[in-house]
Image (cartoon, rainbow, N blue to C red):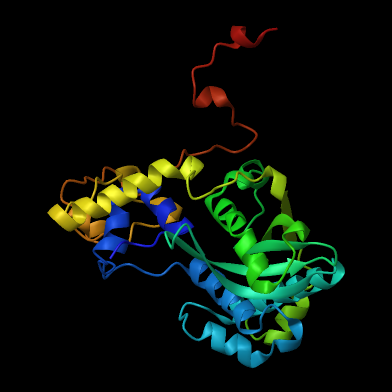
Length: 317
């Protein structure tokens, strides 16, 4: 059966064909020393909260929070407080900007079921309707606006606008574009002995906020069945890999430059390196395992001449 692609699967293929094969073709189990990303679990829990309450404050409750967070063992009381704080800001943002949620977790299928995805929310501002995707972040990046109009997810979801309008009985003429929201995670730490409500009250002084980037529909590249534009090459390569896997069990070439993406080792590290990431490797020699410091004199006596041979003539301007 031919694989159905998504924006995330094609991103993974571009990152590393071998990892793509392990995840989607071989369905290889993660290495036993692979630990889930706490940041990923935090974001998943927050998204689950929004999903369970349909992005509506009147449907949110403590039971929703508990149900959403239960599958993620790494979450702490601090995480619970931060999720509550970020949801509070999300609901307040919608109210302030007159955003009405029309539909959540909308499944889309494109190009004869070649692509599939789930849209976080369809939002109305009273005049137009928008496709919205919501992400969590530690810091807002100044680089986001420069590439959003060419982001795979933005382009794929934009291509589904007509089918969304048909399914929700909306006018395609009222479709305005894409809204990309970043919910920033506050940095304030939970204090021992503090109740969850006390911690949430303290987080109200946090500078962490929300940014929503608006991409008008005219600025987003158009895809159609006969023209997949910038994705035609990667789609073709992924399909060729699948065909070769089915006939000769070929699983693509590894990209060793991506073995440590996102500050953590690949989940399939052992498949390419023949050892778990946590296992010592005999070829590695530690020269000096102790921290190295330069002994510093008293400030009155210290000068850089003690460390470096500096020619003072070079600094006579």
